[in-house]
Image (tube, rainbow, N blue to C red; front, side):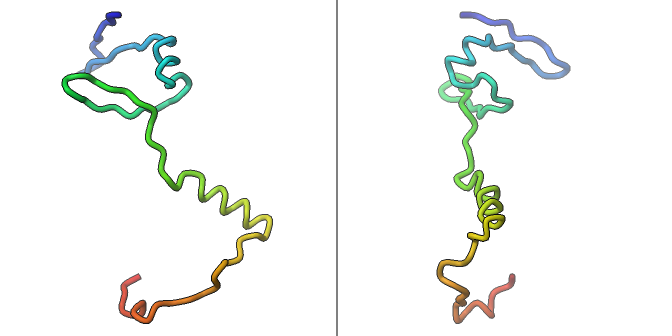
Length: 84
């Protein structure tokens, strides 16, 4: 399949067909990860942070009063020397 490379201001752009995006699992996403590998432009699903959703989950636990510390408060002997 060939697609046109269009001028967009000082840049260039392409319009990706919807079936192609669906096949790559990118349909409905607003961002993608992009890189050049061996002269090919590669689009992938964006890499999600390993901690994505943690803040929301913690907030939900707090509303249910299930956010108590499992180990309680503890400190390290050398913590007083650290700049927080």
